[in-house]
Structures are given as structure tokens and as C-alpha cells.
Length: 154
Ligand SMILES: [Zn+2]
Image (cartoon, rainbow, N blue to C red; front, side):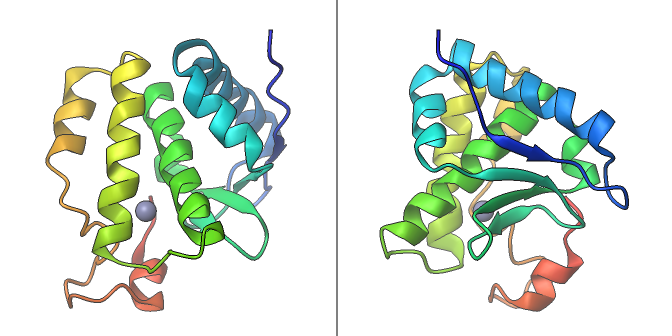
């Protein structure tokens, strides 16, 4: 049996370790048990999972940041978000990452695949199917900017 050995870091300001660690571990176990190929893919990137103010892929730190609003969603949703962000690391490390709709659509497709494999409720699958890749552009100006990042709380 594969052990999932990701570094998991809570944060006293955002989500304390005692709360963050067990749920994230549960989500990683869910990926391992139900979405093995995604789990292996994720493990290959050696990423840290970190409680933070906003969710996202932090390339500089090799970390997937998880904010409270994301964290409080279901295990299946959080597991799918981990793979969504992992997709951005794949895009980034293969030199093709450009923040914006194309990158988001691609990450959303992988996320949807995970939701289907881990047995997510139909509401989550329907929601994901309705996403057009513009979710990063919260202020609707057609550009994905630091402003959008700062407005995120998911
Ligand atoms: Zn994304």
C-alpha cells in the first residue's frame, strides 16, 4: 500500500494544525483509495499542503494553499481542489503555465475527473461541469490579476 507522505502545515491564523492535518490527510487517503493515478501524480510533485488566507498554487514555495472556505467544503471537494492546484504545478513546471482561462479550464477538467472517481455528490459534479475557466477572474475584467487573487477567499 502506498503511503501518502505530503507535508501538511496548519496555520494558527487561518486553520490550526489540529484541524487542518486530519482532514487533509483524509482527502489524500481518499485520492489514494479512489483516484490512484491522480494520487501518484500528486505525490510526484512533492508539494506541501498549507493552510492560508487564499487558496491557490504557490509556485515559489512548492505549496498548495488552502483557505478556510475551501477547507470547510466536503472531503470530495477538497480532494478535487488539491488536484486542480496540482494541475497548475504541472502546467508551471512544464513551462506552459499562463494564468487565465485556458489554464483554469484544463485544471477544471482534471478536477472534474477526480470528483467523478471519488464519488462526489451530483451537486459538485454539476457545478464543476458548469465552470468555464473564468473562476480566477473574480472582478470580471477579463484578466487574472493579483487583484483577483486578493479577492479570493476560497
Ligand atoms: Zn486554478
